[in-house]
Image (cartoon, rainbow, N blue to C red):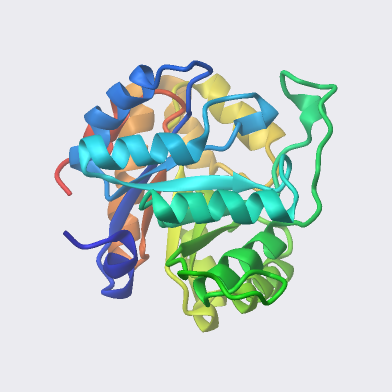
Length: 287
C-alpha cells in the first residue's frame, strides 16, 4: 500500500481528515471514528492536546489507529509541552512505533486550556521543530550526535491561503521548507479562487499542498468563521446559500470544493469535520 508521502510524490490527490484524541485512558471513541472514515481517506490527523486541553498522546493513538484500521496517521506535535530533549525523545519513540507522518506546530498557550496554571515550554517554535525532525531524519540529534538509527519522518507544516499578506506567508513557508518541511496543510478555504492564487504564489516552493475545509453546519457557524476567525473569508455566495440551508447545504458546498481542488490539480484536501465524522463519506465518496 502506498504511503501518503508516496502518493504526494506521485501527484495522486489525497484526502486527510482530523480526529480529536479523547480525554480518557480508553481510545474507543476515536477508534470508532477512525473505523468510519478509514475507507474514505488516505490519512487521519491526530491533534496534540488541541486548544491546550489535556488529551491522550497523539503518538500512542496514531499507532493504535494505524495498526488496527490500516490507515496512516499524521500526528501533531507542539512545542508547548516539551523542551528539545523531550521533543527528540517523542520523535524517536514515534519512529520506533512506525508513525512517520508529523504536523509540526508551535501550540496554543496553556492559559486558554483546561490547565491554565500549567507552564508552557516553547523552547523553540514550529520551525525549530521542523529542524529537529529533519536532523533526526539525517541520522543525528540537534547537537550533532549520531543516532543508532535514523528516522524517516514525512514532515508537515501549516499554511494560510486567506492571510492579508500572501507574500509574507510565502516567505514564512520558504523558511519552513529550508528547515525541512515536506508538505503543507492549510487553514480552511471556501473560495476556489483563493486556492488557485495560493498555488500560483507557492509554485516555487514545490511542496504538496492539502487545502483545509471545515464543512459548514449553519449560517451562525458561517458568520462566526467569517467574522471572528482570522484568515477565513467566506464568499457572499456561500453565505447566501447557508442563509436558507443547513448541514446538508454545507456538505454539498464542501463536496464542490473537493471536486474543484481536484480540477486545479491541488495535492489534496484536508477535511476538518468538527466531530461530524458522518460528513466524510458524503463529501468524499469513494477515494
